[in-house]
Image (cartoon, rainbow, N blue to C red; front, side):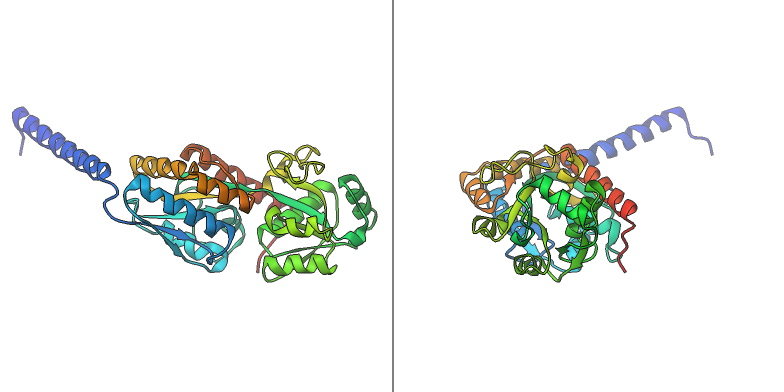
Length: 332
């Protein structure tokens, strides 16, 4: 059956009207966002620096959004359980999550339990904060700076050890990256948690430690650990004589060892909703109480754009893949 030109025109007008109405409804729905509480999934147990910062920011985001932001801790499988919960949630802005170097870069490359693609399954919102790392030795090594450290460890290949929270952890990757970049042969010792890693270094079970600065700071001040380098954008005020790896000519190692975390939403979350969440998070990061608490934790607030955070994720993912390929790391 042939359809006249006039009827085709009416059909086209009707279709255009329907699409316009749909677009209007979508816009209205987004303009009214949020009209109920927003759930923020933290993929780790309560109490860590990531959880503390997430709760601080969530509490202050309520003021900008007009709705509570409720933290939901989903620990397990190195953060993979929480990450998957975010990825599989409806892309309506009512479920968002905290993404970290581990959940967005390490797990997808190494962890078989991880079933998320950091690029395809998430919409970046903003990076919340970064935490510098410090590299130190047990005093028994009797080294005082980076040059002495490298000279000693290179002279005794395979003799010295460094611990991490487990095979395939970011700590393990940093050790392997050090071995590759600095031409060392540190032996990796896996522990069950970062607390045990630090205790091992203090007791002399291992001789070299890479750790977030805040947790190592008390032991450095007490002379129980000797710092030789930091991974940070610039030297730490508390350690003005300790250079960054970037200053020492190792920018990739420097960037790999800086811990960062931020907010992500499920992929396909509408851009206006992502923008609203990003603006609320950035406003929260400017709160004096949040900034003061982050300073106590040794964290530096970021608050960048979704595009910038997406680039951070992609760049870190490639760094991790490179280390895994070069060092032939496998997790059973």
